[in-house]
Image (cartoon, rainbow, N blue to C red; front, top):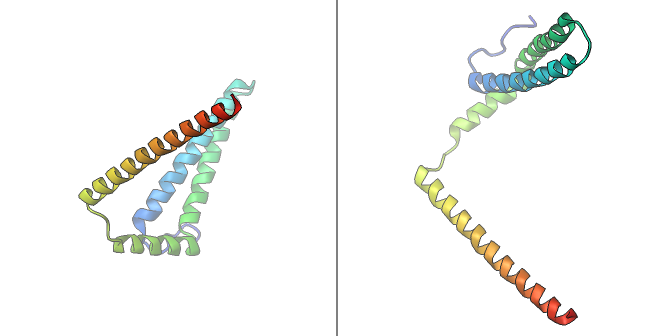
Amino acid sequence: MAFDIYKKGQGKYTRLCSAFGAAIIVGLGCLQLYKKLDGADLGLWVKTMVPSGLFVAAGFVIFWLVNKVSIADFMIASEGEMKKVSWSSRKEIAVSTFIVIMVVIIMAVLLGFTDLNFKLFFMWLLG
């Protein structure tokens, strides 16, 4: 059938999150469409039913896409691989973040100093 869930229970969270993310994007687009139609001189039915109809139609397309065999297999495999990832500890992330911030600050100071020296050199050369 067209609306059967392919491999039910596998890749559940990946498919749900992808579907909810797509629904949020479509919903925001329909909201913008409603705002655009609200400024036009159209009937209330057109202003409300066109965005609502598009949202419902997009919902069916999203459901179909997350259950399409090739896409669903990819999402199932992705979720399986994410379970195998060895995530860094909180301490490792904090230390790495501190190092990155320090390197960025040091590079900014060195580039600023170099820029100032070039500015002074060219002002002396031209001036």
